[in-house]
Length: 120
Image (tube, rainbow, N blue to C red; front, side, top):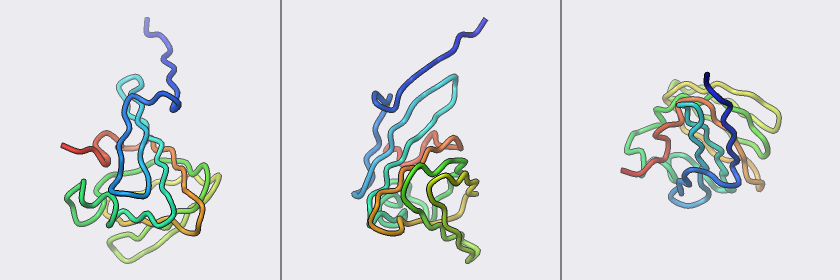
């Protein structure tokens, strides 16, 4: 019989630093990867993660919850949307994003977080 697994973001399995303006704390739980991104004011995917990912836009699917701050997402098709505290969101691959305002955005990600901002 499987047992319950409990971990804390206070002691993450891994910390992935962005190219400035934040980082992602990563937990491995039951064969899944869960991330907590802390995106500082001024963070933008195309500036702070694109150099790590090596793709034109973010190709990761995100399923998450915004704990604090605000994030604006720019889809490759030209559509835009914004999320803030208390919002649950599903973001498909093919996007850029940026922090809105002067408060860090903290975002829990339960999607395809496995290789997000992971250096080779």
